[in-house]
Image (tube, rainbow, N blue to C red; front, side, top):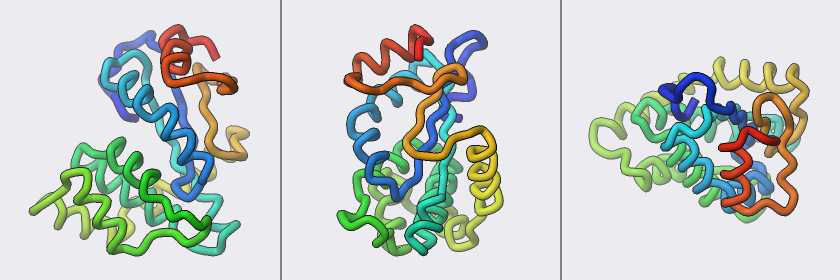
Length: 177
């Protein structure tokens, strides 16, 4: 959850994203700032479910490694920033993925440095969050989410067509999918 201190009664925004998903990159470019503001201002509880199905489709492990890197960044208070930077640094060709050096560069780009970077690297090298990521994938699929990006507002799929960042934020604040 991006903002665990959000008050009871605010809308719940569940986001399902795969780090390798090019449409998720577009989603992030359009709505990322609005999502960050909604979380920062506790206008909704924002829960990010990383998905990794593209690893199977593309026959690589980049989604798992990038998701793990984001959770390692979360240990440093930088989950949202890391995910945003990962989408911004997404390779132009789908399926190429990221090297470990590129993932580390992303960590540094979101101000994870010094001993925090050393901790991040240990977490990343050990794929500390692999079991958590696998559970998120299974639970997402069991919940009927079969594509990314998917945004659920109070459990209902949001209709994103025609929405800009301001419209998205207004819909989330109002709790209307």
